[in-house]
Picture 1: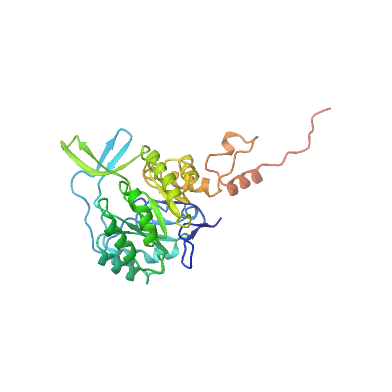
Picture 2: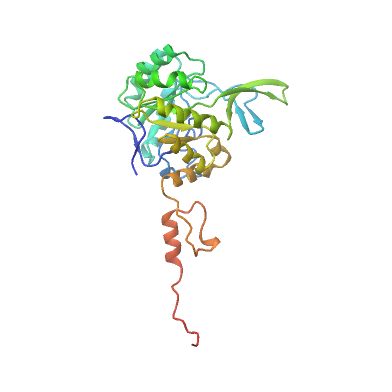
Length: 310
């Protein structure tokens, strides 16, 4: 299976499975290699990276909600140069392309990062994350400043999604990621204060799914849309594909059930076998692939001659 997830062209990005982790889910390289089969993913989207090092947020960083969590990390990372030097050898050995998530702060930093990343062959594409309160002109300037030979994906902020999508597609975005998790505020009952952060959980899905469907009708077909938000099962992912997304990114489901990311990828990638009608429960599992199914059936002893008296 070959799926083009960026605008057609000389440097378009083609993946074998339309499923990948969202930025901030699997770290910078292969941290989850013992829990997730990277072969089954379409790409690895790294944790957010900035030009200069950022420290983690202080104080409360996670608050449970009735239907999800509120998370405030501060986007900790050692800076672009160190992320590249520490991980490029690992990226080179991964069986899937690497999409580096670059935090868009200032235009000059986007230009600087683009010049650096164009020399890093181990990075196949760049995903530009925009701040939630960015205005149209600043967003357009950042996209236009990202002059790279690599494909540029742009992750749109939740609340400005409709306003920014078409202008940024026209400014040169090779794909749109819908969307960054929305921001909210909740009370930390232990500290007794209000905390702001991003909201994750299943209830995000209907909101983002509507955005994907509407924007798929409003922007040119040549600009792929990647859905991201509230995906917790293969069915959720297929809903995004049906709404017009060419691929999906999965976030919180991976933190709760690391194998769910792989299961979604195996499902959409066609690697999950359907249960044979005469298979016993111990001969089949929901994540069984074609290879495993064939091996199990081959291992079963052949039936001998029927020696029962006639």
